[in-house]
Image (tube, rainbow, N blue to C red; front, side, top):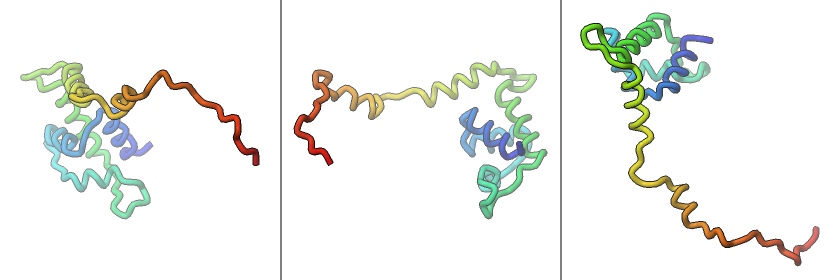
Length: 120
């Protein structure tokens, strides 16, 4: 498993967008642009693909520790940071489209079998 694979899996598991990853890398005093970051998440056969080096992954992990735990002077509880992230994505003001469609279905209708079906 390459550094790119690890980076991709962490990004998906923690539901980070590119701008959030850039901010986390800034916490570890590592500056990178969104386009450079996007090159790590491309497929290997893409012309703009770039290998993620050990230094980038190490700085991301160090920044992630600071992001989740905070600094010695200003500690945070990691569970609070992660729960804020989940609450933002789960909250919905209106019901989903599927939920609205389910309400419209008439439950009194039964399946119909056709008797005069042509046989081929």
